[in-house]
Length: 325
Image (cartoon, rainbow, N blue to C red; front, side, top):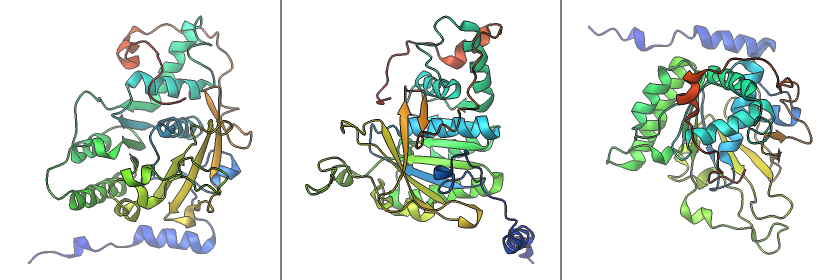
């Protein structure tokens, strides 16, 4: 006779968490030390999170900055699959945020420090090769077996389809990601594009931002509301790229926070977290830089050059990529 008892949750972990909620001792997610940000968004282990945004608004910049904050403040390690960005482009962004300095200006004559900080970055970031395509199950399996706390899939529609019913396949993939997160306690962030009909929506003529693209809602994601239904946290990243004064201000709309007991909450309507890009190497929130006290200041430390890093930095000209920052 089949033993069905193994399918029944003994509830030990759930009862432990419930008692912590009762006594006010529940463990909160990890913040970055800026109240305006932390009251809305916290890093929590074992979650499946989604993010969307128009093309060219700097979604990758924001997620790389957030990953750097988690690494420098909490030692979090990341495994990144970003098929629309070259590895050196991602490294440039990470390096600038990591140091609070410009790689193309402040490290021209600081080779020793340059390689020192690359070693630090290498300890916290790994990159899945983008010279081939992967199915969702392959990417999930790679992240599962990496020494990391988070995985990034950017964007979702770059994964190979099985050629069947796409709607059902998407639900299956989301379920598989959630299961892996729960089994491994890793958190996966999935970035997605906006459906074409919503990518053309602009603010009405009577609005102060008339003519500019509107910030996307959960249902705007390519493939529909099903992704928001499955995600733990859902983020909308927006920037008015053609606004003369706000072109360098990124809006982070927190559309969904599933577990509010451990901290975080949705942003109010039309009241996003506003992050101002400064010199392409830091974000400030109301003038506050969460990495200000974590930014290295000694650029003259003696550190031997490591030729083994050549493959890691994926040598190439550091020209601008398709993103605005």
